[in-house]
Image 1 (spheres, helix red, strand yellow):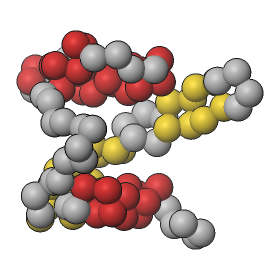
Image 2: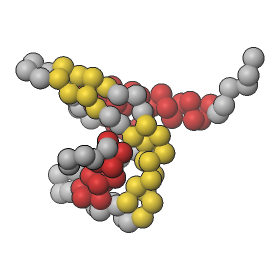
Image 3: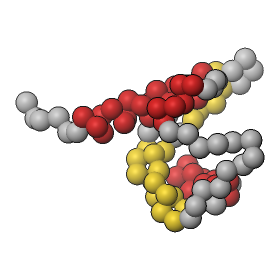
Length: 99
C-alpha cells in the first residue's frame, strides 16, 4: 500500500492472508533475486503470532521449518529458508561468550 513501511506491510498481509496479528521479532537480511525479465527484493521478517488462529487455504498446509526441505521451492524462497535455518541454529546455540 502507498506510504506503508515493509514492517507495516508484513503485519497487514499477515492479517489479510492468515487472519492473525503478528509481532515482528526481527528483520532478516534482504534477499535480491533476478528472474529472466525482472528483479525482486524480498524483505523478510521473523514474526510471532500475537493473536488469532492462522487459517490455511485449501491448497496450503502448515509444516515445520525443518520439513521445508521436502518441498520444491524457487531459488529465492530457498535462500529465505536457508536464512531461517541459520537463524534457528544461532538461536539454539545461544549467545557466544565475549573473547
